[in-house]
Length: 501
Ligand code: NAP
Image (cartoon, rainbow, N blue to C red; front, side):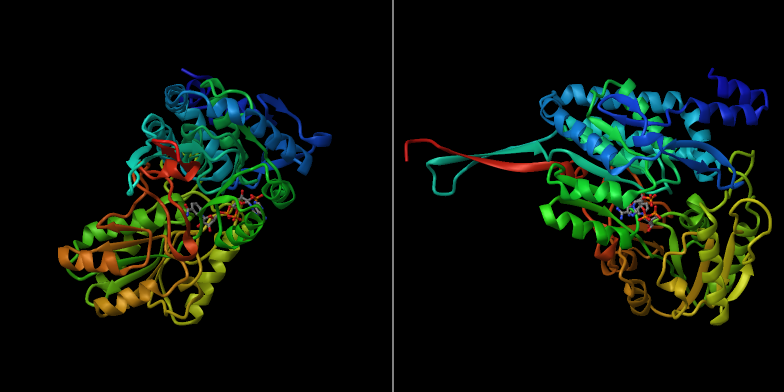
């Protein structure tokens, strides 16, 4: 049993909290060493449930970023030459370590990000699964052998690692967004520099330590924590030494990075924002639809790219659906994620809290009715209550913008064609949720909706064995599934003449 587990069992959560934070390395990991940032610069990491400082971590400069990329470049050839089995074994060992330490890691994540402990454990299990999945993919990197159509030659098709990668991740899933990139990068034989969000660096620092323990060689994974994201990353993107950028974050920042990547034509994977429609047809099982709505809305306090952002409910059932959803939402326990029984933690910061509150005020000013919640509480921490609004007009700001908070906006619809048109009326296209028991309708709607993913009668879609990603301004490329590793591989064709030409 770890000290933290022992302390937790003894009921001493304060010691445990301090214990897990104390244990994390808080410096940069470059070329296999934990190092201070230039001039010893640091920044504070806060607990969003109290606003208190948890600890300080290294604040990397542009020079620190360069050193990290140089390390990734130096390790490139030797890591690319490792056998797939060796890389798979490293990922498997890291998978095991994540599970061995899940209690400590969950507490650490909850402290820096706010989500309830049960959800943090769920995220770590999900994060670990990417390592298990890509350990399998590492040994299945395929190729081809083809007879040239005119004869006389043969084509070999080989897959090779793309080269040094830059990986940038958001704060909402502090560990899973890292393993979703590091898993395929390591499986493919790529080295990398990873930059976590400044609000949640601790989970990624803990993950990098685990990778080192799992046998990942020096220089293969390097981490820079920083408050100067643009100053540190832009020179690396434009340097020509990195060959790939994999980014998860907002569409706004993704577009800036795509422009930067154009200069040296970097390969890119972009997992960007969403605006998921959640559609309930009158033939749906209403209890299942309500449960699905809670899952699609309340996972991560609504701070998820897949979060149901617009709920279209058929006019015949919207009153009953709204009543049942509001009753369940009102019954959820809000509080510090580390406390027993808490189901809804704080939002990430005061800006997030203000934005959610503004979006609710805007919808109400345009005619929406509050069924539950809707008031920002006083006191410490960035809390917002589970909220259900109905009669939300399509002109409301929240119909177009990511809410990123625990607010379910209901809008009535009349027919299938109308709801498909409404669902597609957005520049985003990540995921849609559809509840119906009519198979033909389910397929028509799933095919008609312009998204990369559809949840049919299910409120959660993320699974490492499936290809996750969006269309339109929700992104480029896929993470996970059989295709996830291709994002980190180049295809090379080798033409072989059978006779002298
Ligand atoms: P964000 O503001 O775009 O930040 C994401 C990451 O980019 C952070 O590490 C951030 O660093 C960094 N960054 C910001 N500006 C940068 C720049 N100019 N150059 C290089 N890096 C820069 O997004 P967020 O608020 O953290 O995350 C929420 C967004 O992520 C939402 O839109 C959500 O939908 C999206 N998301 C998408 C997926 C998906 O799979 N599609 C999954 C999760 C989240 P700092 O922390 O220092 O700002």
